[in-house]
Amino acid sequence: MTTFTRRNLGLAAGMATAVALTAGAMIAFSANAAPITGEAAPGFTNAVTASGETISLSDFAGQTVVMEWTNHDCPFVKKHYAEPVSNMQTMQADASTDDTVWIQVISSAPGKQGYLEADAALAKNAERSAAPAYTILDPSGDIGRAYDAKTTPHMYVIKGDGELAYAGAIDSIRSAKVGDIAKATNYVTAALTAVAAGNAPEVTNSKPYGCSVKY
Image 1 (cartoon, rainbow, N blue to C red):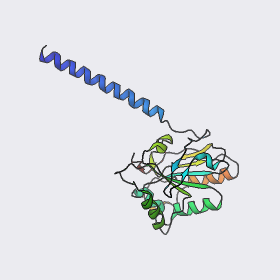
Image 2: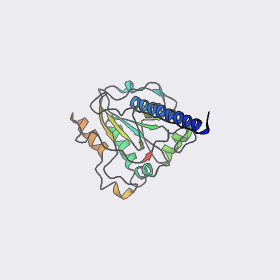
Image 3: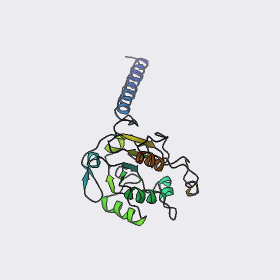
Image 4: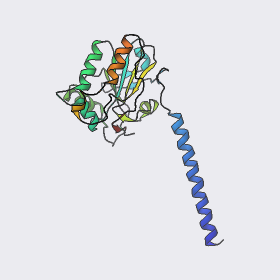
């Protein structure tokens, strides 16, 4: 066999491999398609929390649920937890008084930015006076991928009947500047207000912004 022929066969094999990998990636992407607002939110069962509990989405039937993807080292997350503004902390506290369940999710893989073990996750929340009802540890990324969570923060509002009411950014100004919080439209707060009134949010979807989730 000539060198030219061997080279062509190698090129063809490489192209075939690339096509196969691309097809596999497309299948994986389709399997993790983004959840659709107005339809049932992705369920999860026996998720382990930083406090050692296991929870399922079905545990909160009849209650509004907020899902917040977080990474404590992400500048965009730091923006919303920055004190004295304490935007995320205030939203969490307001949710608890309205009988809304606030679930924080850490989907960073071990060794990647934002990954925390249980004790460290609890300590981080105590340090910044955060008050989620639960902090789910999702190092496998299974829950994050089920929700197609792309950024930190990435926010979801789920109605008591399990319907996804809102998915996307926390607010309308895509920056890491604390000063922009007061000028922005807070999509999560607006969604919670609408759901509490029995209405659909005016904005049900928006493009999330922040750091990529470190799967």
